[in-house]
Length: 292
Image (cartoon, rainbow, N blue to C red; front, side, top):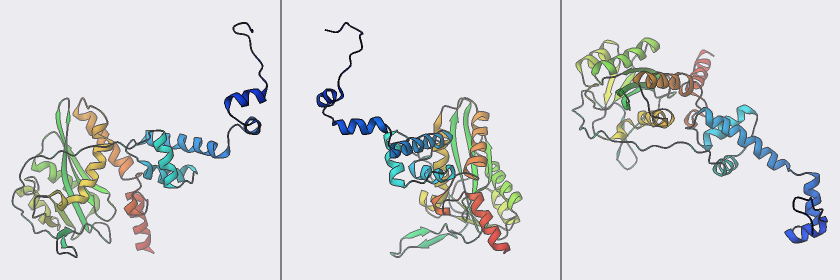
């Protein structure tokens, strides 16, 4: 009997018989312990972890799109399999309703259409930048109280073209966001669609829309589907920023929102509806084609 701690040499044939493995398989493993597929999977997982760490809101589809930038080509099914095995998952949230009834509309619904069955719907598509804008307000709690964001989104590129952040949800919040978009884009005849919130029905906003040549549009039914394309932006914001941690101060959250909109959403986040381009890239393509 060998003394405890003494190394025991066991013949390969005997060890393989006990472990239920073939000697051929053992020698093949000894020659090449890691196959090329496993090696490639390891590199892909490492790259996916880096992409997900940079933006926890990315699911496997967005990760598959980003992998091409680091020189890795992989199908969505393969990325899904590896991400699932490594628990690389996008964050999720559940949207909470406000419980408030919308007021009467002050504009016609210029985006309303009927589908093939005659049911009401909306056309959020656009053929050029600044043809249609959407706007809405979101709120989130901090240790100092709620913080409110009003954003303006371009339907053509999904780019956030203007926004305003404040500790109070007043008409000045909406007016500031719209004014910001106007100063940056100089729109002509642009449709500005919103829900029926009191901020968008205020005299201040109505006057701002009229004096700057915008065409006001407002959903005539109290349903989130009236402004669904804007809700998709707030859904991403909720997953990628608002619900990622507890925010102690309004300034901390305000800075996080600004950084995410300016550096991530507008410039980096690829969107399937934009042929896997970011909003800024998609608008550059239009500008180049229009100048040609």
